[in-house]
Structures are given as structure tokens and as C-alpha cells.
Length: 479
Figure 1 (cartoon, one colour):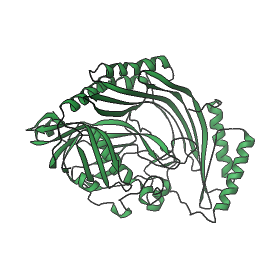
Figure 2 (cartoon, one colour; figure 1 turned 120 degrees about the vertical axis):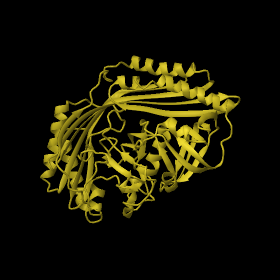
Figure 3 (tube, helix red, strand yellow; figure 1 turned 30 degrees about the vertical axis):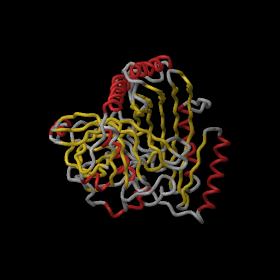
Figure 4 (cartoon, helix red, strand yellow; figure 1 turned 90 degrees about the horizontal axis):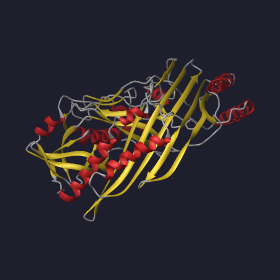
């Protein structure tokens, strides 16, 4: 994390208001100013050794405006009045020249919003010492090493931070927020009988340190190591052909994220992201198209409490809401920012986010989930005479259009006569998006969220999201 001079927050807010005022005098059609400050700590542990640690803060202001239909953008992290005046003049001059060659940009009309919100913490991450955080992660590592498996190598990467934002625009919006996040990523390899298995996963929450402590990561990582040893030692080859497959919320979540969330981003659909992050098999006319069985409901909801992708207003000042991407198996809506919403002649649904102050907000997922059904997970398993249960995955891949995909299991088991029996060695699901969602025949009520960092854009923007939902069963062909 970059270390810069720490400015008084009220002074920074005043600077943001000043920039807004100055640009409004330049006869722009629209302007928005986004002030952001992030402070926190991070460290990296490899095989028990602290390899790196950092702490500090970064603050700056990102500005977008429309001038004669051309979109201008600049960012600053130095707040002297002369410097601000200079960069405004330079940006306006450049944007005026670009009007002749750039496409005409239009933003959707949105309601002016005024709100201030903050996530409360019992154990404030800024007051929880680095020694205590190190001790916490070392405790997780200890549980892993005591699991009874031969852990060949392991790494842990811990990051926390408080992000403060102040957003104003020429429509009259003024939104201020303070959101703390804690993030822990680990990777380890179990080696038994000359064979290796690898597990990598991420835990993340919005809130104080007490929330990640409640996740019982020590117990979960120990169970994962034991299961990997069991798979290497006792695992059998998975069955092939058409078979019922039950997947946990971890698997249904990555499926929803990759095959629903990404292709439903309206900038992908319109070709805006094709050179940067891929395309979409979806086209603008597919709203109302059947894409899954009647029980399939997939939502993107940034308002879920404690979720890693939580926010109440996006980085264009639009109020966040739950978006029903698939409703009863039918494509219901796409993810929009104000630019794509204007092209579709609708209102934005609050899906624009930027990873930092110095990059533009683009369409992003928040928490993309399969909504729960009426079954219990154990009822689905008891109802399955012969099949496969996949608890977590080792790897996945999907094509640029988010149509053809593969999910390779890490921990998986055979289901025989309604019971989980033998461990299976890395069964793989290879499937297309329509076949996947149309094959769903049961969804459980065991809602879970799993943190992730989603990458998109140029330059690449990694942004916090959650994925998950409920376990589900599909009848598909295994290869």
C-alpha cells in the first residue's frame, strides 16, 4: 500500500466540493467527484516465515465529467490549489479536442441521493495490533499442520483496511461511507504416497475483526487437509456418463459468478469489454429468454450484511439494490452503469465500481448467488440413488463468451443409495451455460457466501465480491 501525506478528511471533502464547483463553471453537462482514502495492514507468511508486511494509507480524488457528449476523466493525489487548477484546465483542453473523434456519451437520469453510512465494528481492525493479527493467522497455520496430513508447503496472505469515500455530483448527490474489510487468502499442498493435491481459498468480510474470528477457519482448513489426504490415499476414479451431481454453495457460487454474473454485464454485452476482459454469449434481446429450469433464481445483491461485496451506493452515486439476473429460469435483467442504462433506455441498477480513486468505475458484480430452494442438502443426497457430491473445487476455466466451462473438483464423493461413500479423485464438469442451468432439478436452503477478488478492466481492477448461495443438484454428463 502506498504511503502518502495524511490530509484532514474535512479538508479533503472541501477540496472535492471545490473541484465540483470549478468544473460546473466550465459549462460541462455533468460532473462527479469521488474522494477515497484507504488505510490498513497486510502481511505474507510462507511456510511459517513472515516474508513481507506493509501498512499505510492512500488517498486521492477521481473526477469524471461530460463535455459536449465527450467523457473526461482525471485523478489527483496532491491537493494544492494551483495544481488542481492546472490539471482541470489541462483535462478540459484535452477533452475539447477529443470531442471531434470520440463517441457521444450519455448517462441515464438518476435521482439525487444524500446519505452517510458506516459499518460498525466491535473489534476495530485499526486498533487490533499487527502482533494479534499475526497470532491469529499462525493459529490457523497450526491447525493445518496438526491435521495429520503431510502439508508440503503453505502460504497465507492477510489484508485489512478501512475505505472512506465521499461522492458528490452536479445532480446534487452527496454520499459518504466508511467500510472496513478483512481478507485472508491461503494456499497449501498435501503430499501423500508421492501424489500432490492443492487447495487455495479466500475468506473475507465487511466489518470488524470479530467477524472473521467467528468463521472458524482453523477448523475448516484442518478438515480440508484431512479430506485431501483421504482422497489421495483412498480415492477412486469418478464415474462417467450421464449422472446426478450435487454441488455445494462453493461450486454453485463460482458457477453463478462465471456463467451468469460476467455474461450479464451490459458493457460486455455491448462489446465494451471485449478487448479487456472478454465478451458475452448474451445479446441485448435475450431479456425474457428461458436459460434454466423453473427453480433457478440467480441474484446479484450488494446489500447483504457482512458480505465481501457490500455497498449501499455505487461509484456513480446510484442506490444499490438486489438485481434478479435469472428469475424462475428466465433472463430477467443485466448489470448496468449509467452509460449502458442510457443505451438500454432504463435506469441504472447501481453496478458501477472502481477499485481505486485513479481508475474509472466500470460494471462489476457484488454478491452473485443462487437463491435458496425448498430442499435440505441431506434430503437431496438421500433422494439421489447414484451420483456425485462435490464439496469444493481445485480449478475452473471458462471461455471469453462465458459459454463453455469446466470445473475440476478437489473434495468430492460418490453417492450410493442416498449416502455419501467413497472419495473421488478430481471429477470434472465440462458443460455449456444453458445446459448447466437447465439441468438443475433440486436446490437446497443452505445459503452460504464465499469471498473472492474479481478481476476485470484495463488496467486490471481487482474488486471484492462474494459468491455462493445454495447447494443444487443437476443431471449432467460427466467426462
